[in-house]
Length: 302
Image (cartoon, rainbow, N blue to C red):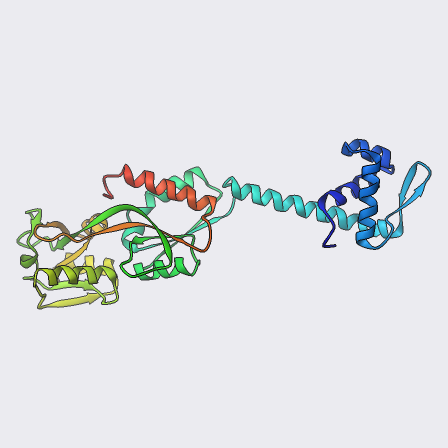
């Protein structure tokens, strides 16, 4: 069956239903010799006679009777496969899996997902909100279609497309002395307990680099595993923190007060990580366009 073509199957089914090579050739818009040759080649490929010739009419042989439903089923499967491919190409079906760091997933991403869902309601969306290191790992292992996080400092096996640059900010409790000033010096911030992410976090390392540049050190620290916990602790008055600008709205919602850092700038590109082993799907490219357009026009993100 490896050498049997879609054209041969189509010719055989039409000829079997027409009962005549002449009538079948008219329906297929080919010459009778071309049809006859195609049927002979099919019989050779299958290793048996499919038709019995009776003057101007043809009749299926026992082998042909057996093969006819098989041929029809193969043609249906062929068409069904093409239909599925066309639906996927036109974003009428399929899925899109995104990994995003929590600071992006809970603020910048939802408007983009809403826009995508409105345009392509048949595409199933999956979101995995995980830390930056896991986002990149999932993309590298091709377990997601795209990842949304900071650009990595270390060599990674992804293709990175920058969306914007995020500048880190300070967050303090409402009762902090600088809470109503809008900005703070790094040294003044460290008068309080510094709440940080765990040591494996890239964002934690960037904060540490900024402290070293200013030759500053936090004497009191508390480590957390995620930014939501950081925000809750700051809001409760446990301490202060330095977080990405992306966290501004979630921090405000928890009760923490965002402040601009006056004397140090921690800025890192945020963007899309794509697998390098495969080309992006149509759905991935559509989401990429939406991300770019939504973020460029959103003052809440940049």
